Length: 478
Image (cartoon, rainbow, N blue to C red; front, top):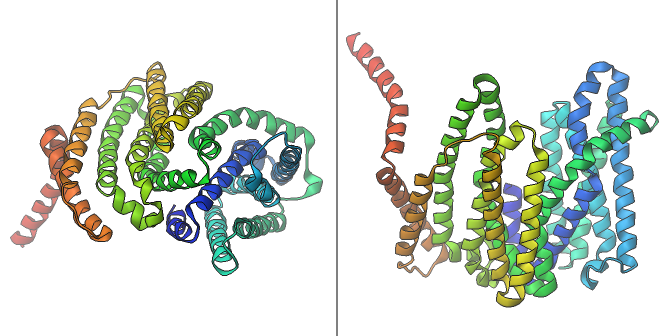
């Protein structure tokens, strides 16, 4: 996340707005293509490799080799098929994207193979190697691609070439490690096992694909209806909103699943429902804080992170942040469906919201421009979370913290309106002054509006206070 966050201000200062929009569209098309190319085989690695490893070293090598070779064959097949369809004008991506097609195909192939290696490393519990591969691929990609733009020419051919060389080198290095570790051999490929792995993985593509389209489909439509200039503004605002949302959601999401599964297994339904309700309560408070900071500093954040050439994107930022923070709530309403293994229900809800998002973009973009895409994002994520909340309650009911939700809305509305009356010319100074004030006012407001939360915090502190007092008394008696 930090690597992406640090590279974003560099790219928005090197590239013109329209070219940044073209790059955003290119990477989103590549993402959709990658999802189809990898066919969910990374899930098969997590599912089959641990059990095959327990049988014998031969089974372990055969499993890893089959998954790796299958990923290579699928990636090359999908890359070749996509290239042929675009060149035959069956799929029209536009002249600008078509000119970059050979490099895009190469990048998709590399990114379709890499997740299988990552899945095998996770299943093998090679945590350090997994982290090294993930971070080296991203960091080398950023260095090579941004370096090519800076040192050679501002041309997206060089940017993509840098990504392909860097990420391809990391994948090749991991493949050599697997070969030297005795886990990769072409002669160990088993066609029957490959078909079983695909039978398990292919149904999982639907959820991943609809999630990607829900997140990225608007970029394709903006490019089609409004052009790369407007797409560049929207992509910059969306990137800033995503960093704000992921900074809050990603660590919570990583901790939440193992936590509620452990409680479900050890303590049962009532304890799980109580935990999810309390966790959602605290998460909403965090969402309110993030929304307030973005609302107060929208103009400053766009100027500081993206540069003044993207200043027109500041009006999109509050709407997009609100939409993405609503989306972040889905991790709590997913829980009952994941506990009861209702992945098909999850896919159906996501598919409906995906179709709704595309329909709203088609309806709103020609009428109100890129603000229509921002509103479509907000409304589709509200629909997603509402749908998941309704469906998930059939499997596990937990109390919704309505009071916290209303308190956050009231505080964010009042505080941001008050702070907007203060005008400071410098973007950095404006943000440095307003952000701490907003945090203090928000914390004080929550303490006043939510006395039960204040009591809960004080009760959690009480044992520590009592313990420290006891230790102090013991020291004095000596």
